[in-house]
Image (cartoon, rainbow, N blue to C red; front, side, top):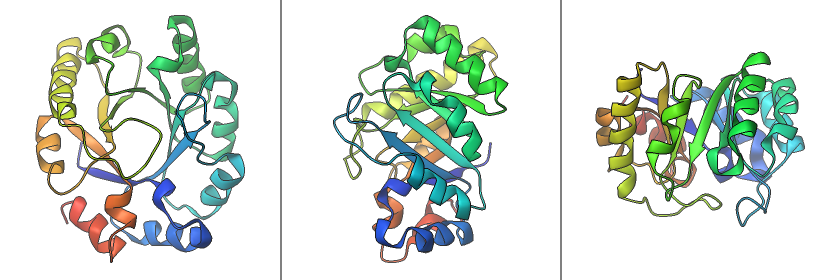
Length: 218
């Protein structure tokens, strides 16, 4: 797939949220990325349904929701009703039965199903799931905070996942979330990643639209 940038709205200016949503609409970005944290699965709280709804009302591009929460199955239907097209849950937040049920429910509600893995989680745990999901979210930082430095081992994990996906003849793509910038995006794409979440790399720039354009390779 062509390189796709998904700006993380967690890094937007919440005092000017609609302004930043319109900025993403007019930028080279492909998606909006929603980092949902509950203060339990990760040591931070981001935003909930009221903020997601406010973004959805303005967004003109697909919504990609990343649930960094415990018991994600409780909220899948509500995200579908918001109009989310891509929904990922964490492998670490589910046992096998719950993960199977989450994937099934996400698909039944018309969304694409993703599974995210933390930096400490080996890629190999996803081997049984690759033919059941639409994408893998590889965390390039420890989930819970924006602005962290990229974990170098992420690069090798992307390469391993790409080989696993090809070996399983699975139809799923790789999304990298955290620490993505101009210094590593080309290599990650070459190794098999297709979607890149950009938080501070986009919104902390003097010109966010130019930063997103550069990340997109335009």
